[in-house]
Image 1 (tube, helix red, strand yellow):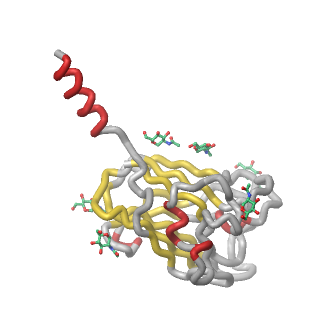
Image 2 (cartoon, protein in one colour; image 1 turned 120 degrees about the vertical axis):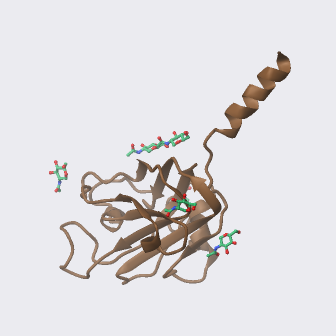
Image 3 (cartoon, helix red, strand yellow; image 1 turned 135 degrees about the vertical axis):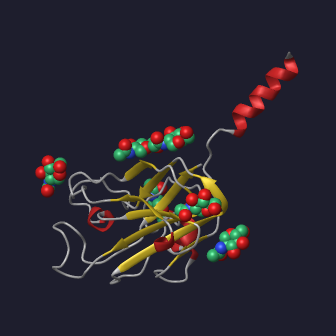
Length: 180
Ligand SMILES: *[C@@H]1O[C@H](CO)[C@@H](O)[C@H](O)[C@H]1NC(C)=O
Ligand SMILES: *[C@@H]1O[C@H](CO)[C@@H](O)[C@H](O)[C@H]1NC(C)=O
Ligand SMILES: *[C@@H]1O[C@H](CO)[C@@H](O)[C@H](O)[C@H]1NC(C)=O
Ligand SMILES: *[C@@H]1O[C@H](CO)[C@@H](O)[C@H](O)[C@H]1NC(C)=O
Ligand SMILES: *[C@@H]1O[C@H](CO)[C@@H](O)[C@H](O)[C@H]1NC(C)=O
Ligand SMILES: *[C@@H]1O[C@H](CO)[C@@H](O)[C@H](O)[C@H]1NC(C)=O
């Protein structure tokens, strides 16, 4: 009986979801610079206590770009269940005047088996949030199977984007959790 209980316990555990992105290899297309403080790996370092660019826990991409791409390599194919993004706030209140809201708007999440989002499937694309409604911690259920989770945003330049959007595209990701 005891061994049956242990067996059932193990079966339950082996089906529990965990953050399969934690400490996995990560990459971004246009890094802010080469300093570790802003590295793509900060998005999966498990640290989410300091949401400032100086805290060394967030990914930062370069200024004045029209596309922003970041991905994590889960290193094998997983059944994904949900994804949480902790966005940069600079540790100041997340009010409509917080400039990072304008950068977050319009983002997409893809799950792919390659580093190319276009080879994969769209998990989420923001078309509804605005400066008032976008949250600093975003959650979505995403029942897809794949090896790479890709964050993507794009902009068309000054005056060419929906109201409230920053003119440029950024990765400002403090943590991306992928439960699978
Ligand atoms: C995502 O799934 C995990 C595992 O089931 C759960 O612990 C977590 O609360 C979920 N996240 C959200 C935001 O629902
Ligand atoms: C975040 O890190 C910066 C740089 O180390 C520090 O000045 C600031 O106090 C930290 N903020 C929080 C909320 O931990
Ligand atoms: C992703 O991880 C796998 C397993 O470690 C590795 O074989 C593959 O080359 C990695 N992909 C990239 C693009 O680095
Ligand atoms: C990735 O490959 C697996 C195994 O072939 C497949 O089941 C899955 O649908 C693929 N995922 C995507 C996003 O194409
Ligand atoms: C943002 O969206 C909400 C809900 O759809 C709406 O009530 C609000 O007026 C919008 N705010 C702006 C600034 O567009
Ligand atoms: C997402 O989930 C986290 C807990 O993991 C929670 O703190 C946050 O408020 C949630 N965000 C939204 C928009 O519900």
